[in-house]
Length: 167
Length: 124
Image (cartoon, rainbow over all chains, first blue to last red; front, side, top):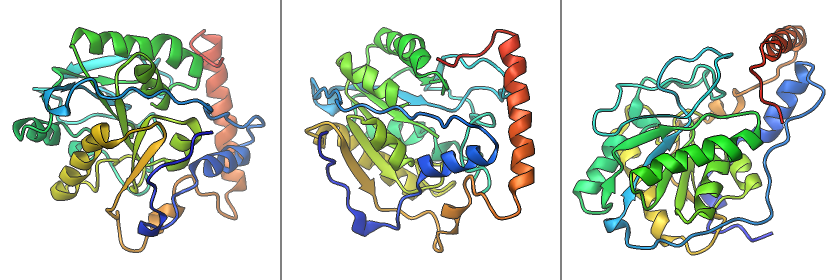
């Protein structure tokens, strides 16, 4: 295992134990087999090939372009970063619906701020499309179908780096 | 999303994840992670708090160039609310919830079975 870096516990309350919370919640629902979270000992790492000021960056979210039903098949989707929809959706996903909401796009799809960083010269360009990554129970499907498709679309847009913002 | 980040990175595209599920992300193992201590749903900051959101996003993209090794986690120092009571609410199981949750689970299994019967499920 590689050591964790730069995490300052003194700045915060204890993080919410989401894996434990999820296990207990579904156990209380009578599910016998707990979800097995993805885990790897090795972590890939690619240094920047050129400065961020010269790099094109796409935004990738887990929110969706339309209000999906829980049984809808989730697929990779893309939309314009220059004329983004006023909001995205996540009613079929797990997030803290008791505490908060998705009514403010800036709280989960930071296109305006990235556009400002481009204007300030801190990022080269915002990719012309942003992408919606399906969250899948099947890790195999994510790795063999969805991730390659998102990467293919990003390559089409000649990206250099990527910002991923899960709900 | 952790799997997508790992896939991109292995293919030569540097990534940073901005999110709030610290334990899940670190359990998976990703190249660069910015931990935003918000309720799930608002990783960029409190809704309608433009200054907080702007600061979190700016600090996040900086990590693309400051991180020098995998499993880099950086915490951004912005609280969601004063009393922190939101931390207890997500998927909370309270005394007296047993019957309601058991019913919810039975409904979910029935729904999953219907989807499976229609050939629309991915479980491997």
